[in-house]
Amino acid sequence: MKLNLSAVIALIVLTCIWSYSWIVMKSGLPYVGAFDFAAMRCALGAVLLLVVLKLRNRGMKPPPLVPTFMIGVLQTAGMVGFSQWALVSGGAGKVAILTYTMPFWVILLAALFLNERLSKLQYWATGIAIGGMIFILQPWNTDGSMMASILALLSGLSWGASVIIAKRLYIRNPTDLLSLTTWQMVMGAIVLTVIALFTHSKPIIWHPYLWGGLAYTAVLGTAIAWILWMFILKNLPAAIAGLGTLAVPVLGALLSWGLLGERPNAPELVGIVLVVLALVILSLPKHRSGRATEK
Image (tube, rainbow, N blue to C red; front, side, top):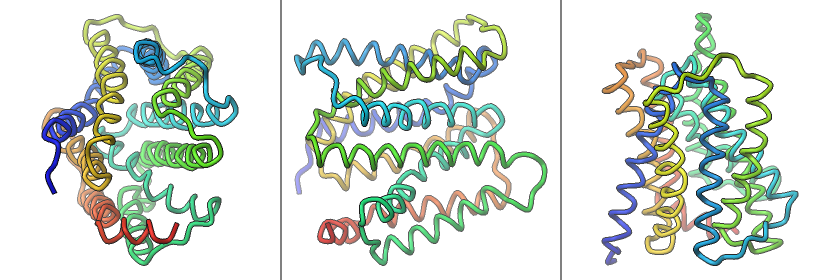
């Protein structure tokens, strides 16, 4: 199988952008509250996506409002909000790994709400992931570090729930991906802005690093990243694209260890390895083909 070289390069660039964004989000917290940063980042990203939507002549009419709003609450306000909140006390690498447990929440929620049967590999992968999450959460540890892990898991759960709603929307009313991504982010950014106004905890320090962090997460991590992602989905097999997203939390964890000096303890390291192993199992071609035949 001959791969599109431009799409492969785009996937590598996207993986690096999304991986490093965890470092940027963590490093910006000394200058701004978690929800303030999340709201500003998503609001700026939404504006940029609206411009892209207009320039690409996709039409400015929003998709069906109720499901789009629900996706915005879950995918933008929930996923971004919970993960940014988790970074206040949690390491960037661990938060990235737990947020990317999203595929396992999708599997469980699809079984509950879409009547999709789990394959044997899905059972194995989910069981391994649950074991990994227990090691990362360390419920036997009472030092207060579990709060960040729970928030990161809620981020992954919110992301997974948004996928289920999006799948239902696509089945009932086929929707342009760019339009849905843009309008859900607009609505999610509004929700985050309201939350930020009510939870404003400290003055914003308009340090150059904060400006740079906002520019990175909004321009590179949101607008450009989503354009790259749509190009990748169009020109690469889904399995290859999925492996690229799998690399994001792994590279994010490695960057956090190298740049931020974060070092997981032994149980956390075991848990991270188990979660990554489970994600690899989910990305196996055999699993993908089996899942396709079940639908």
